[in-house]
Image (cartoon, rainbow, N blue to C red; front, side, top):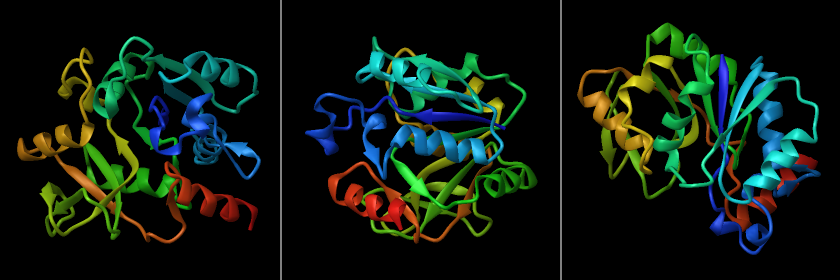
Amino acid sequence: MEGFILAAGLGTRLRPLTDDRPKALVEVGGATLLEHTIHKLERAGIRHLVVNIHHFADKMVDFIGSRTWEASIDVSDERDLLLDTGGGLKKAATLFSGRENILVHNVDILSYIDLREVERVHREQGNLVTLCVSKRQTKRLLAFDAEGRLVGRADEGWAFSGISVVSPELFALLPAADHPYPVIDEYIRLSREGYRIGSFVHSPDRWLDVGKPETLEIAKRWTLS
């Protein structure tokens, strides 16, 4: 399994912390969000990672190059155009081997989700994509059928947790990376075309979106406990 860390966002919800650094380099418990994410993926056995960059891209490149990592790390450069989650994933396609499943992880997510288990379920179910989801209050909810397959958006349903596993065959099915687009919309399209977009349900406990100040403070207590 390889890994893709979505780290190109502007981090507007974390201003003023992101006025002079990318969100990925905001620190929690003595380490940056990027470090926390890289180490989590390394602990899952991943030895090749791709990180996309845009906001304060030079600082991201310098930081990655200044550390010694267990995994090899390539950078997908979005300096010219921020491509959102879908365009960003498509642009990074050529940096992967094309032979292994890819763990896609938002840089602002901290969790105790077992990433090896997510990938195992992905393989056993024969999914094109497996989305980590839980029951949480959010404005954007997804609906799944009785077999756990994505069917669309819903007023009541499951919240996507910013972590997924994708098969390399996905890349050929995504639009070109010449414009920004959200990947969830593409997953809904593909599910309606008959591709298996599955789910991995986890507890909302010990999962945090650290992209806003209030949860950043919770995360600091988390990592120090």
